[in-house]
Length: 66
Image 1 (spheres, rainbow, N blue to C red):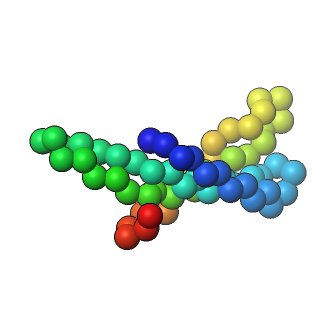
Image 2: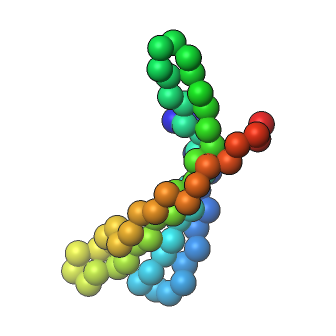
């Protein structure tokens, strides 16, 4: 995994979402494949506990991109 690109969107003081774009390389039988993957993570702020992950969602992958 490399070249992480985070994008932050804060909808309120207690809710924030991150869209992370990164390159993921997998290898099977000595054949490597690299994809650009986007994951959305939603956080909520819980009083006296701090920020907690509310949801993590695989958005998709970008192909044919350099």
